[in-house]
Length: 525
Image 1 (cartoon, one colour):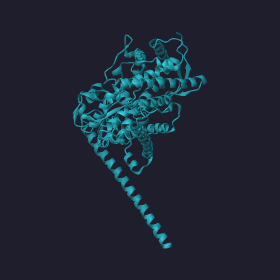
Image 2 (cartoon, rainbow, N blue to C red):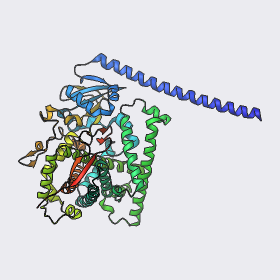
Image 3 (cartoon, rainbow, N blue to C red):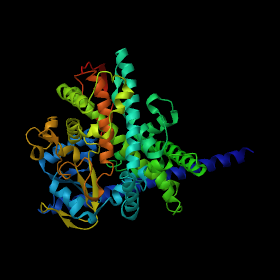
Image 4 (tube, rainbow, N blue to C red):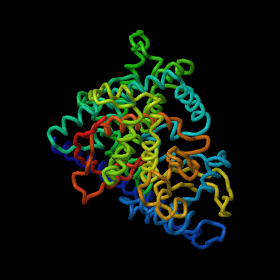
C-alpha cells in the first residue's frame, strides 16, 4: 500500500515537473521569438533610415512607458512631426495628424487600408466580427443594413421619444441630488442614461440602469468597460498572447469579463428571438437588433448568435460609450466655462419658446422636438468643440495591404499600421490656429449659424466610406440630454483645483468619474 502511494506521489510530482518544464519552454520560446523579431526589425528600420519613410521617433516601449497618458504623448508626436513612426515587433506603426494623409487613407486609397491582422487579432475577443472590427463582405453587409435602419423615419421618431423619456428621468434624478445639495458622479449618470437609450432603441429592451433596478445589466456594463480597457492594453503588451495562453494577469481578468459579456448578450438575443417568435414584441420592427435577427433567418449558419452578439457590442460602444463620454467632457468644459453654460441655457429657452408654466421636467423635454433642437446652433457648436478637444475615439487606425506613397511623399510599406491621432489633432495650432487649446464654440459659427469643417481635419466621426452612420443620431441624443439638464440646472465642479484624467481605452473615458454640484437654474420668461 505504501509503495503504491509512493508510486502515485512520484507520478504526480513527475507530471507537475513535466508541466512546469513545458510551461517554461513555451514561455522561453515565446519571449525569444518576440525579442528576435523585434531585434531584427529594429536593426533593419534603424539601419535604413530612409529619407522617404516617416521620421522614426521610438519603439513600442515609448508607448508602454507613457501608457497612462498615451493620448497626450500623441500630442508630443504631432508637435514634433505631423506624420511620424514607431517600431513594433515585426512592423512599423505610422501616426499622423495630417488631414491630407487621413483623406488619402480613408477615402482616396481606401481599398488599400483595412483593419489588418494586427488590429483584428487584438480586438477579436471583444468585438469579434462586428462592424467596427471587420472588413470586406461582413462589413459591407452590416453597414448596408445599419444604413437602412438609420435612414428610416420610424427609427428617428422612436429614438427621439426614447431620448426625451430618458432625459426627463435623468433630470428628475439630478433634481433630487440638487435638493439635497449632494455631489453627483455625472459621468456615471450619463453612461447609465446612454446605456438605457441604446438598449431600448438598438435592442428593444428596457433596462432602467439609471435607477439601478437591473443588477445583471450593471454587472454587464462594468465588465464591458473593463474589457474595453484590457483589450486596448494589448497594443503595448508584448506578452498578452503568452498571458492568454496561461490564463494569467490581465488576460485572466479579460476572460472573466468577456464571459459575463457573452452570457448577458446571448441571453438577450435568445429573449429577443423568443419575443419575436411569439409575436409578443409589438414594436419589433422599431429596433435595430430585430432587423438583424430577421435578416439572420436568411442565412442562419453565418448570422448565428455569435455574429449577432458581435453586432450588439459594436452598436453598444457606439451608442453608449462614445455618447456618454462626450457628454461627460461637455459638462466638464461647461463647468470650466460658465459663460458658455449660460449662453447655451439662454439659447435653449429661445429655441423651445419657453414659458414659465413649463416647469415640469417631463413637459419640458416633450418640447424638445426636432425643429427646436435644430435651432440650437450654439449648443451644437459647443458639443462639436468638445469633440474637437475630447473626441469619443481618441485614435483610430488601419493597416496597409500593399506598399503606398502618402501625399506628403512618405513611403508606406505593406503591413505598416496607419493611425490618425484624433485627440492630438484637436490641439494642433497648425490646424486650428493659435487658440487651438482653448474651448471656443464660436469657432464653429458664422453669423450665429453652425458651419462644418472638413471630416479629414475634424475626424471625431471618422470619414470616407466608413464615416459614422450614427452621427446625427448621436448629436440628437446629446442635444436633447444637454438641453433638458441645462434648462433646469447650473453645474459646477466639486473641486475646481482638480481636472479629470482619462483611462486608456478605445474610447475617451474619464478615469474616476466627473463629480459635480447641480443647483436649480432661476430663469424668467
